[in-house]
Amino acid sequence: MIRNPTPILLGAEAPRVLTVPMIAAVLAGGGKPVARNTLFRWLREQRQVGTLRPVTRGLYLNQLAIPRPEAAEAAAFVRSGAIVSLQTVLGDAGVLNNYSDVVTCLVPLLGGIAPSSRTVRANRLEYRFHAVPARLLDERAGSLEDRFDLAVTYPRATPEKALLDWMYLGSSARTTIAGPPLDIDASRLDRRRLRRLARRMRLEPELDAYTLRRSRFDADPGVAANDAVPR
Image 1 (spheres, rainbow, N blue to C red):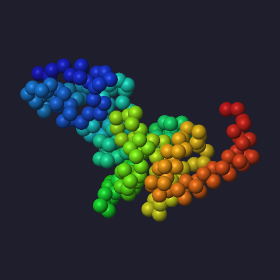
Image 2: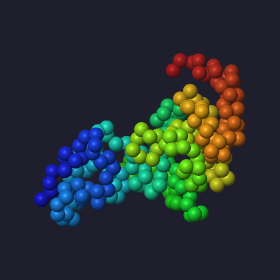
Image 3: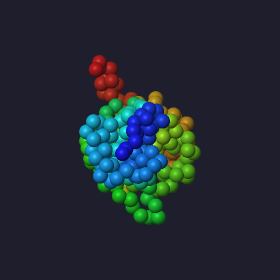
Image 4: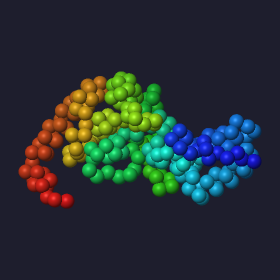
């Protein structure tokens, strides 16, 4: 018999992303493990009623957690070492005007071995991964407070780090990704943090060139006239 797991799955302290072993432990409640058939029957029932939202095979978002989990929270479970960054972070921060709901992430190149950067699509969710040198993700790239959004419980870049990550990919010969657009709301960025990170990431030339292009873009009469049109 399954003990009632609802109190554990409900509320602000509840686990937000769950794997099958984690769910099995919750159902056991410290007692005898539940039978495999019982476990998967319970999983099927919870998917049907909407308690668990499938992400990929064996991975779920707990819809009873408060606030309700976002797809980005599962990125590091989908691909080990993944850090949410780029368009996802900049869009959520209001720096980008137009962005998709695709979860964009970075994964580290370790020991010269490239991790899988294959896009993962499942259950109306999409995760995109871009491999970068580990030095751009660890303490060599800046302080913890500069690199990571510490207000969340999963690996997520600050907006300033996300913009520089995009600049790196846009300037790298290893990718065909275009750099960040010029029509961003830079007022939402911490300029001092941006400069500190650029120095540590060795991207000061890229930041300077991008800033100059943005200044010219903003000064363009056509851009100014377009911004003046009521929307």
